[in-house]
Length: 193
Image 1 (cartoon, rainbow, N blue to C red):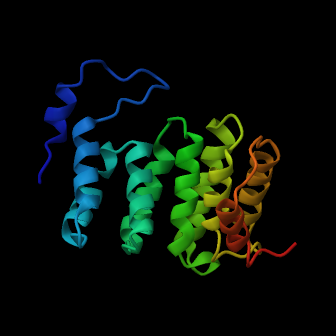
Image 2 (cartoon, one colour):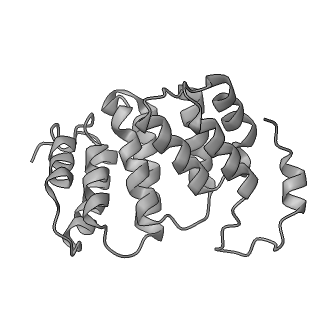
């Protein structure tokens, strides 16, 4: 499937206003179709990322990282670096669900061993500290911490993220169910007190 982004832009009814994300429905639909393939079509996924990443919203990038993690689809370092770079460039608000899905997607990364893993954590931390409001719900806490399962708190990126998550956890008004609690504890298995 090929998408002519310029043609899609011309069909958008309203110009993008500062602070408002104009979601490209065709790109979102394309992202969903590529991610729904069983088994995954790696060539289409690579094409989607390399050709369309500059037009993706934070929601598109989050969906790709989340679904690739959930389906255990390995992304190349180049693909991951591209997604991270464009996520950082997006000047849009990151919702709590998006932040927790991004952190959940870190579960298949190699933790502190890979520079791009720490770069992704740092990017998520920056987005969370700048644009997020309100507490996480219990599921978002469980998913966020679960994504940290391969990380140790020996790096500044992990320490910074843990400080931000601590504030989110403290303000949560919900009680965690057993699954959410297990996910959170499992994700903290390599974190020292």
